Picture 1 (tube, rainbow, N blue to C red):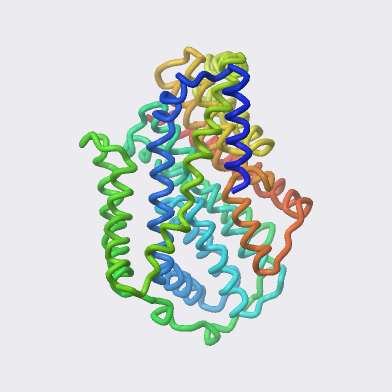
Picture 2: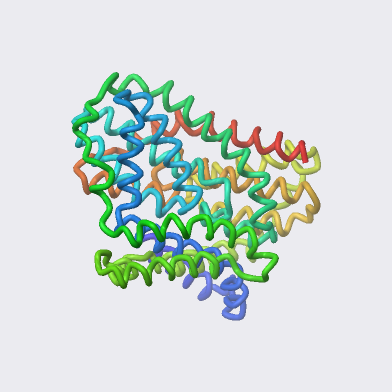
Amino acid sequence: MGAARAATLGAVLALSSGVVRLADLPLLWLATWNATLTLVSLIVLSLLLDAAGLFRWSALHVARRGGGSGRRLLSLLIVFSAVVAALFANDGGVLILTPLVLEVAATLKVSRAATLTLALAVGFVIDAASLPLTISNLTNSLTADAFHLGFGPSAGVMVPVNLTVVGACLGVLHLLYGRTLPRRYDLSALPTPASAVRSWGVFRTGWLVTPLLLAGAFLAQDLGLPLSAVVGGCALVVWVVAARSGNVGSRAVLRAAPWNVVAFSLAMYTVVYGLRSAGVTGVYGAWLAGWAAHGTGGAVLASGLSAAALSAGLNNLPALLTAILGIQGSGVGGPARQALALGAVVGADIGPKLNLVGSLATLLWLHVLRSRGIHVGWGEYLRAGLKLTPPVLLVGLLALWARLGLR
């Protein structure tokens, strides 16, 4: 992954210039290891289930539930993408769902415009609707670890916010792109969902493990377990079943896992930590503190909009890490501190969709499209991002403000 190499080079420069010391590295690893290993475990789990055919089976059911209506298919794909992002993280979700939606579009023989609409819906929602759980996005996990936000309390705030965001995605995508979809499509062209399953053992284990994963995540803090141990344990169970079944390439899945994400996360945090040593995050934190003094609304909007702008211009991971260090150094405490933290999460999850470089999930989405012969230029994507992102981002931040105001 080129991003990992670039981040590593930046980390080396930060160390060689002295803004970050070697003695700081254990502290940085402590701040990132749990979130990054949670993400890797989730992607391994999702790749195993994908190899068994679970997601293809689900996508075919979604296409059949569309009943031959293009607009209904779009709605169901948006909801399906939001569910996958919530449970299996945005990066894993985009790798799995983008090829599937392209296969469905090719099977139904829809136009390029309709194909791009369905793919854009998946790519946009996978990031924008990755708010509800700490496992749904690496940025969520890092924030939860940094501010000691429990899985249950965090979900209690963010699940309603995410539902509002999904509703906004439905409205905006239908308004802007619904006319590109066919009024009707031929259901008889779709294969039966059962034909997609390659390993019924792994398939059934996946359905069993998913609720256990959620229950374990809710109980992890009370049991004193890191979230990565819960997710990793579930992934291990499915991997053992896959290895015994012989129908799923379990070793190939481990080789395909994004282990370089661990290096990317640690290296990027090292670079941003260097900005703290240079005083940049201190200035940012003081600015956030000024807005937080105006109340919850000021805190949410300031952190959310600034994190979104930084994510679109740089990438959501360095943007979120900058926000974390800024908030930690701001001196803000209590409910205002939580508002700043969660506002930054909303901004870092939705804001990246403004630009192609905003998130790793968007870059992966673009790579999958190009590998299938669909070329989306920077200008074409930017026009879509500028139309879709601002209204959904604003809805998400206002929903968070309202939700925190009710607590």
